[in-house]
Image (cartoon, rainbow, N blue to C red; front, side):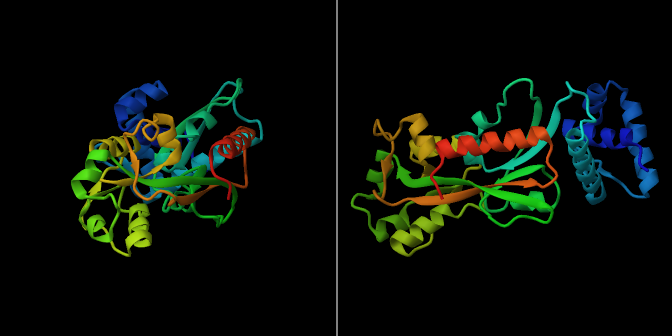
Length: 292
């Protein structure tokens, strides 16, 4: 049986991004943390950390971290953890949820204590984190549960294609034509973000020719406002910022929208804290998202 102090050292080095910070978090010396990692590797007969900056777990190390996460949740469900000890929750979410409705859902009433480690992925690919056992819960666009998991619908984020008035004048997008759209640059969040491609296909039957990649929800909005490109933004984000109302953003295709369905994935072995979190997330999503 593994000594869980060794796994805690591995988790601390990974979470803190280094041996010195892990030592501080564990109230140990740096050499003591290093010894625990070496002892763990000696037991397994293989490395558990890549000695990079910051250190990253190897495939074996990641499996151990996943195991530790599951054990912690089971201990919490069985009431074996200290009452005042926060449960560490690794949650995968899309950036637009994090920029709009999700933060309010993560604030649980006292005395619940959760310590979040938020992993930002596009909603089309974040389920891989659940399949790898890397997260306790996940928000993504897939309704299919993973083995050992369960899934619940949250609703949909509604997106509209928008641009700044100056951008529209520069590229002659009023009236909107396929020829003008073909020359206009667009913004994408990442290589996995296909919303702009879908819009162009639906409206003009074309693909983008010039694409700017901007992996930040706030930066994406600011780039559209500055006129760097057009992009699809969540209605929620624009309502919060009021850019639609004051004319800073113009709807390129009034009446057109894309609804991205979102689902909450969680493991069937669920601690009371995670059940409370799930119910609060569902309640907030019902208030903020479009029904599906």
